[in-house]
Amino acid sequence: MFRIAHLLFLIPLSLAGSLPTLKTNSLVIAEIEQTLNRFSLAVDTHDWNMLSTVFTRDAVGIFGPGAPQIEGLSTLTQALRAQLEGTISLHFLSTQTVDHTGPRSVFAVSYLQGTFFGQGNLTGQTYTTYGRYLDTLILTESGWRVNNKTLVRTARIGNPAISS
Image 1: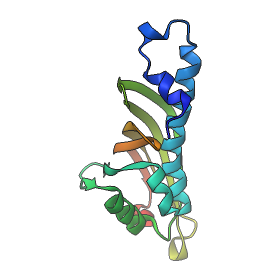
Image 2: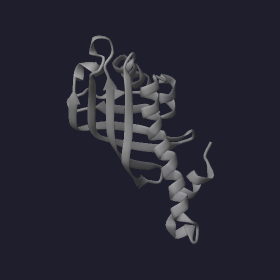
Image 3: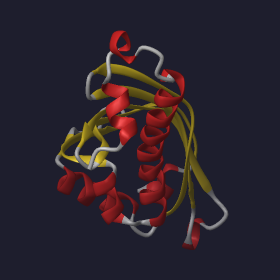
Image 4: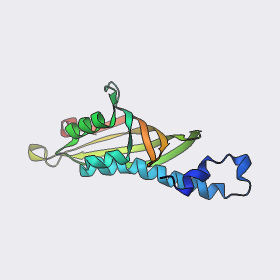
């Protein structure tokens, strides 16, 4: 179901008149940021069902340079689960920008710091990746959902065996 903030976001500025566009846009941006943040929460808590509140059914993900393109919510969920199940991680997003690209779409950039903590014979070791998520989101009947997510890495430190 569409919320009033969704509808106000779609009103052209020429028709909006004296509507409080800054506040309206802030509400929509907050909803978009919540969608992006749920991705981090889902992968860190291994709540794979939560990914359905993040991605569209036909979403595409590319998680690093040279990584394969993963298509579809089900395939994305399976790939993330296979990669991250059993790991302890914390994904932090910051420095987010959201740009309107169409009447029902936005492009968001979020800085990322993802830290993985070693277990077993790797206890005490960490692996941290730094970069940016590039996300295209579309407004669906269920709210804002990621239709395309790309990870652009800028640096990595630590033992990469921890995240595999």
